[in-house]
Image (cartoon, rainbow, N blue to C red; front, side):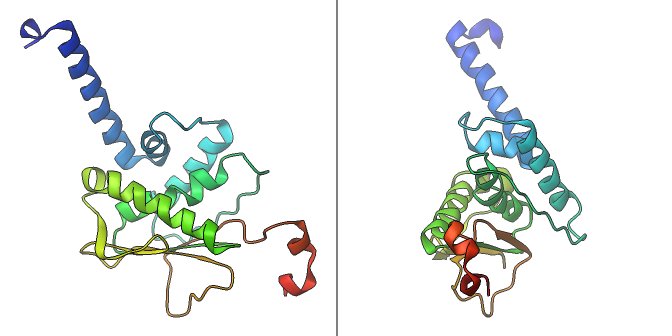
Length: 187
């Protein structure tokens, strides 16, 4: 076949082969998934690789009750790696599971839901054979088509009554120093 391809066609074929291989790894390994779905716009670091390794354990050992707490300064990638990306991978692997993401405000929670829904829309079918439901697909509350799983995102004070979660992600529930020091807010 190589005898019949031009150098440009050979390069395209090679790049397509690399893309298929990257997607294959991304389907199984969370670190590879993060790199793949961000299309070169994500820079890894040792602390992010450690976070991805801990999140991979949730996928590899789903029957163990994992609890992970991550404390990093702002702008170190924890939200991008955990809240904006992991729920889509989790739902791809376990489409009958429920995810809930909670933040201090509705707009931030809406952004978490939107980013995960976009990843499922773009990569879900090709990687995991799943898609977002056409009947229930808002940015803050969507289901996985043909399955019982889905994602609910809400701000503190939103109603989670009646909803369960197999994966609960709590990200930035305190908006600022004033809220953190407020006895009323903490209560």
